[in-house]
Length: 198
Image 1: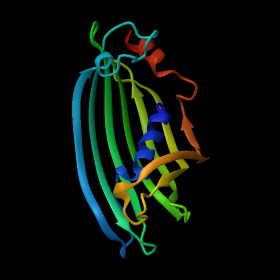
Image 2: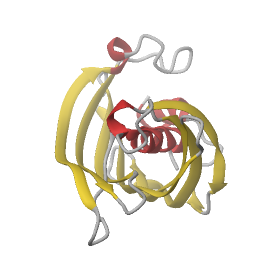
Image 3: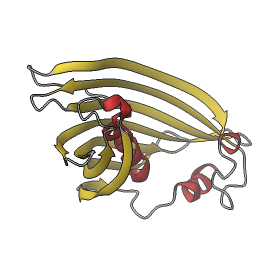
Image 4: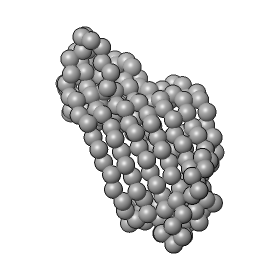
């Protein structure tokens, strides 16, 4: 996806127990259920002094709007499974010419299987499926990435395998499958900012 690494990182947060689930089996017991809204605006170079360093030489305003629902459910094995639907829009604007590069993402992250390894760790297989689109200053769609990313992570369960709230991420084990359309494969986000709004 346009920021497949960003999508994977978001999914890792979900799998690590910091985000939650939306569709649970009928017998699953909810451990947490929360709706999150976040929006804001900031100068990208102030948020992160290394933002596109050496590539983007103009000030970029980052506006974002995020809606997410977090739900953890406990299944028959006593472990907590997460599902996390997310809708996000990021707008990157060159403040010198008011031209914008917009990225929209609709995604659902979901824990598929959790194995208690018996050594204080859990192996979680999760997926992130959805669509991400990029639009230029005139509203024309430039790129679209879509598909289902499935991967595996290793989590320290803190001595409480059934309690996801004290879990700690240990390791990204690897990608299992990554099919789908990827218009942005091989592209560089910072270079795209220069090309489309510079």
